[in-house]
Every structure is written in C-alpha cells, then in structure tokens.
Image (cartoon, rainbow, N blue to C red; front, side):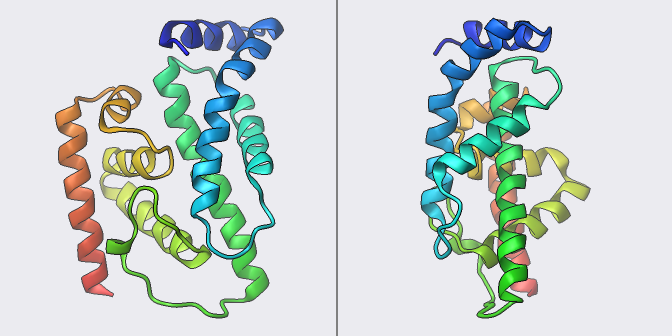
Length: 184
C-alpha cells in the first residue's frame, strides 16, 4: 500500500470520484480491519461489537469526514474516529450496567496492545479530554499511538511533527498519566 496511491485516491475520492472511493476502500479496508481487530481483541468483557461491525462503523464515519491531506492524515483521523466509536460503545455498556463492578484503574497498566475494559476506556477517554484542553498535540500523540497503533515514525508523519517530538511527547504523556494516578 503506497503512500502516494492512497494520497491520490483520497484526493480523487474527496472530489467525488466514485471509482477512486471504491479503490480506496479496497486498499485501506484490510488495514482498517487489522486496526479494528487489534482494538477489539483488547476488550475484556462484552463481545457484542465484533471486528466487522467496528470496522464498518469506522469506515462509515471516515466516509463522512472532510477531505484528507495524505495517507498519514487519513490514519490519524481513523485513530481519533476509532477512539470515539469505542468510547461511545463503552458509554452505552456502562449505562446498561449502571456502573456495576466499577473499579479504580491505574494508567500504568494501560500499554499499547494490552487488554482494556469499559471502565478503563472511559477513564482513559476522560484523561485524554483533560490532556487535550492543555496539550492538544500530546493528546493526538497518545491517541495515535494507543488507538491507532501507530509507530513513533507513523505518528510523526500523521501529525506533521518530528520523531523526536513524538518521543518527547510520549514520555511526557506517560509521566502525566502516572501523575493522574497519584492524584486519584
């Protein structure tokens, strides 16, 4: 999957080219499915939203988005959209359970690729929202790394910043999350 072909197809699809939209869908579907499966496999508990449902909802959400500047911008937006879908789903599950079995979580336990339950996801989303208010770029780095599964290099490309900045922001975000644990 070349960056150039996806970027060109994104531009053509944004301009209303239906053929480009179909080609784009075929090119990115496998990657979006892998991303959705990765996120879905981390969920502990309720299994009602499967990978296929998640990737389809993600694709629908992305289809309604404004134009994308590049492949990196598309996947950064996909990371954010995936977070929103998962949080909405977690909120729905939480409402159904009415907070039963709620436990205090430690952000130290949340790593890229680890399992996460509804309460952890909601607490993480709340922390990201708080981080966003003061440090929006750091929140995007956290989102891209954790929800998008993007590497340092991919995150840098997606956000238009250097890898050194991503590494620094990632360290600061981890420290900030640890501080949030201590203040709870």
